[in-house]
Amino acid sequence: MTNTILSFSLIDAEFRNTGLERSENLAKDLEWFKDQGHNIPEPSDPGVCYAGFLEDLSEKDPQAFICHFYNIYFAHSAGGRMIGKKVAEKILDKKQLEFYKWDGDLPLLLQNVREKLNKVSEGWTREEKNHCLEETDKSFKYSGDILRLILI
Ligand code: HEM
Image 1 (cartoon, rainbow, N blue to C red):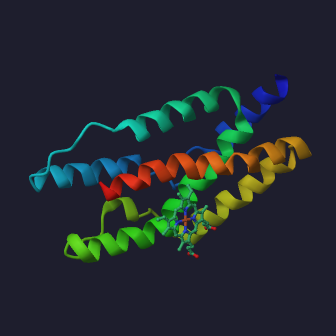
Image 2: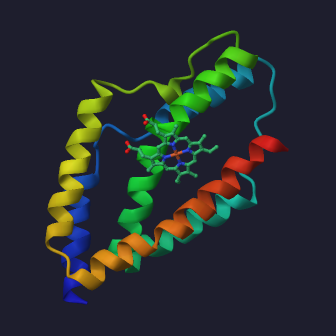
């Protein structure tokens, strides 16, 4: 328990305000879509379900939480950017959405977070590291369910 509390304090200290956060930019994009006459739907089941799952992990399982943290932010900056570019080319007249703009140099922001991830995980036991890695399946499953909404 003490270890868990320590891990959460470290996560709080290291992984807030990394510059990778997307919520504000996403909110701007939603406003833009609204201005274009689109209806902004309520969050659908896969998103609500994943958000609830992450909130739960954030209170009780730091290693698993960090796995999702890594995958989400790094996926958006890698494959996500490629998908965003394709979508912009095909249906947005090449408009670059705010979601794909980062304040500052993205490779540098990513490198900073990579270093922090390595630093935090140095304090973990082999079992805790394995636990973090094994969470990858769930990370892809939950994000995949959200990604598949694009097909509807
Ligand atoms: C249609 C689905 C997806 C496509 C087309 C895709 C595509 C890609 C591509 C092309 C890269 C390499 C980018 C580069 O080398 O710069 C990448 C990296 C990555 N993807 Fe995906 N991806 C998809 C889904 C996902 C999902 C669901 C996750 C997990 C939530 C994920 C997590 C990652 C991570 C962690 C990286 C490594 C980023 C890094 O090392 O900086 N991807 N993806």
